[in-house]
Image (tube, rainbow, N blue to C red; front, side, top):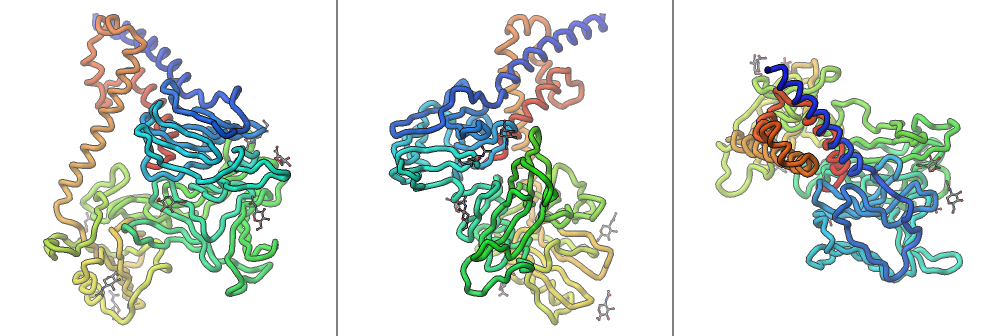
Length: 496
Ligand SMILES: *[C@@H]1O[C@H](CO)[C@@H](O)[C@H](O)[C@H]1NC(C)=O
Ligand SMILES: *[C@@H]1O[C@H](CO)[C@@H](O)[C@H](O)[C@H]1NC(C)=O
Ligand SMILES: *[C@@H]1O[C@H](CO)[C@@H](O)[C@H](O)[C@H]1NC(C)=O
Ligand SMILES: *[C@@H]1O[C@H](CO)[C@@H](O)[C@H](O)[C@H]1NC(C)=O
Ligand SMILES: *[C@@H]1O[C@H](CO)[C@@H](O)[C@H](O)[C@H]1NC(C)=O
Ligand SMILES: *[C@@H]1O[C@H](CO)[C@@H](O)[C@H](O)[C@H]1NC(C)=O
Ligand SMILES: *[C@@H]1O[C@H](CO)[C@@H](O)[C@H](O)[C@H]1NC(C)=O
């Protein structure tokens, strides 16, 4: 009898799974570009279509490779993006710290310039231009032009990159790339490109710097700002004035016959990566930081990265799970009410900072002096001391990942905020709510397609909910789980 029930449940599972799959396929069918226009004239109006689950194209480039449109982010939010159609990869996005809701009352207008307003009619983005038309070039550059011969460009998306640069796009010293999680940024200095982490509100910490090698041309001090360009021949060139690069970073496609398409993205882990479209997928062809442990925070807060071995926790009594050891805190140890006793101290030997050569340090300290210097300074989160050189590095941001080294005389002193349990609880609650929301979403979808009564008769709805601990998941939950993850992932390439 037991076998009979299992069997019918499995059949039912398969039916539901097929239904769900078909539904999701329709949901995720990325872009129907057929009837999309190639030019927007004054008077253009568009609102999100409530039926669209992923992307709503508004304007295509002549090749159909790229499309400007509305992207539905995490089900409920609206982003205006340029997509690489074949891969659904976001190439550009309107820079918004908070995304408006996906509702048909949101509106994108073009009356010489783009104006995006939310459900309440509040303007959340505008280009402030008086052009004649908007076009999307085959380079993925969105331009607002005056219809002259040749056209006059009043505004272009290439001047406002998000986290991505594409082939032939110029990156100047006024521009900044910001990772989609807003944790990292890339900027140019006088003769270098730097990557910065926003570990501490309003203060950024450089964690990668590549100076121009100046093999072919010299950077002339005071000779004007430098800029970068991603060259279709497979390199990232740095230029000052002329067309001779002061620096050239070769990608894997360098000097190989290639007619694909390159893009460079500042990823959510803080790495700068180059990708090459070979016609059906993106190949990784460049990575600024090749060692995982050299990334700004590969193991999260109070994590320990061991080259070749991966992540663990600074506190050896904490087990490394789900990307971090102790939830990142914000705010320093200064201010009223926050005194010395509001943190406890963790010490560990055989550790160093991943980008110590970019950190400032003090010399002539003993280990004790180095520690007490940090202890008494409320804007210090930790200190690292190198006995051999007497260097004392001060960490002026909430402690992230440090690197394990064999040299036991390199020691670390780390402040940990008291009562981590409450923060942990909050994270747990968030994850719980996330899972719950996911389950509710899944349930709603299934209920929409399997008749409610039939569903209820065959197996209790309660059963479905009970399964969420993953122990005895029936088929459809798993399938749906991974499929809906995909759609979340697509969205999570975005501003939170
Ligand atoms: C995006 O907007 C934020 C806040 O308005 C601003 O600080 C940042 O510089 C902008 N980023 C770009 C790439 O323009
Ligand atoms: C893109 O457009 C430019 C100028 O309009 C043209 O020269 C070039 O061949 C086009 N490239 C592709 C791949 O269509
Ligand atoms: C990039 O900069 C170069 C030199 O300043 C210029 O010739 C070129 O037109 C620019 N490209 C774009 C796409 O703006
Ligand atoms: C653009 O479209 C052409 C023709 O379909 C294709 O061969 C090429 O790979 C596409 N390029 C990109 C970057 O998608
Ligand atoms: C954990 O670290 C402490 C202090 O660094 C050390 O004394 C202890 O032996 C370590 N325990 C384990 C299990 O590694
Ligand atoms: C630290 O350095 C001092 C002097 O440079 C040396 O005497 C001492 O043995 C070192 N301590 C360790 C633990 O290596
Ligand atoms: C406290 O530490 C911060 C960060 O390392 C540093 O900028 C500041 O000068 C220190 N304050 C004092 C009084 O030393």
